[in-house]
Length: 123
Ligand SMILES: [Zn+2]
Ligand SMILES: [Zn+2]
Image 1 (cartoon, rainbow, N blue to C red):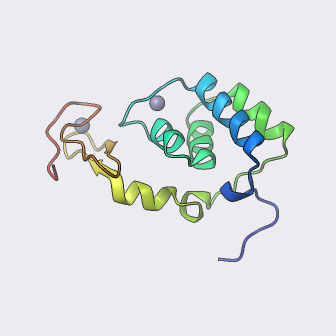
Image 2: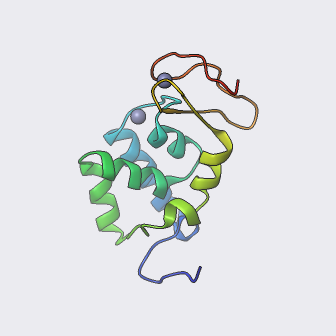
């Protein structure tokens, strides 16, 4: 996929920008729920994917402000291009009871749904 200069990619962010986005994500969505895609994408370092998820879910004033100030425009395809889709596919376990995803990481696979507490089938 050719990269589109109108959009900012995860790897285009400077360290200072990453810090500001991380702070804004933490301020607008203080959450470390393993069944929350926003929190998991944030903690796994997919800041633009986390930003897009948060902006799609709610008003995020701090985050909107930071993105606007740095003229960061998130590619609607960044879900796929910046690695989050792979992480989601690799570590997300879908609950057959409620349909939510709970995320593991390199060393851990969840055995109960973070949302409804049902036993996850693939555990
Ligand atoms: Zn959350
Ligand atoms: Zn569930």
